[in-house]
Image (cartoon, rainbow, N blue to C red):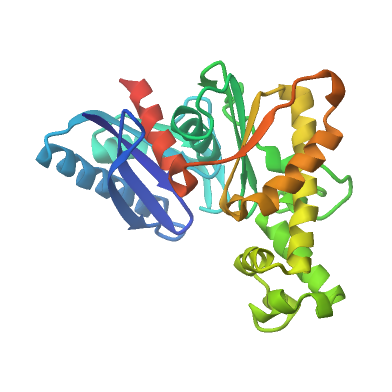
Length: 321
């Protein structure tokens, strides 16, 4: 059995693992993400790699001596420099070279959503797709594009930043400092915002939702919205409908550009299942250009959950050797 090392760098934790040729995670290591310390992150990744190398040797596994890393940020075309990662506080961070120097292993860096898209394409919901667009719906919106068996990175490595397509001109202020970005209407944050707004307007209909928090609209969280929808709360279901419709409209616009045969919805919000998927499909079909004359792209939920980025990064590491 041959294995490679995959690393998923999050804002609070670094998940690393040995990934075999079938996409299975043979061994896992978790390290805390040192807050706002690039040097600390490099040391933590190197330590995780050392643990995994030792495990592979002890268990007589054939180690592919390469590391694939997924990071939430803009990664350059060489797969080595993180140009900008706001959640980690990085600007022009030489992640690849530093981890190579610290671990002694060649590395490749990929945007975390692209790594997750690759994982789903190779081993999850995207197997067999000719062209796949992954839309990761979490705190914001991330994306990954796979065409012709290869990730589409763009000339400068920064393609598929879907969340910052402007959907509503002069709309809500986004963290990128522009207004009306797609993720302001279709993300986990947008879901909570809609649920709180609706609960404030329709308190009598939001008993289940409000009861899951502290009784106030301000106390509603994303988990509350999902659980309340499952319990039949009409306000929570309406919040999912609004966010799902905004998501589906944006995906219809992407189809006019990319024409994929498959969309994969991932990220934390997608764990709500059909509460999100059904309104997405409804809005997509109603808004895609010339829908009556073109084959419809399938829209499915991701299968690999939180492991998609780690698995995808580990598999991409094999391209180095």
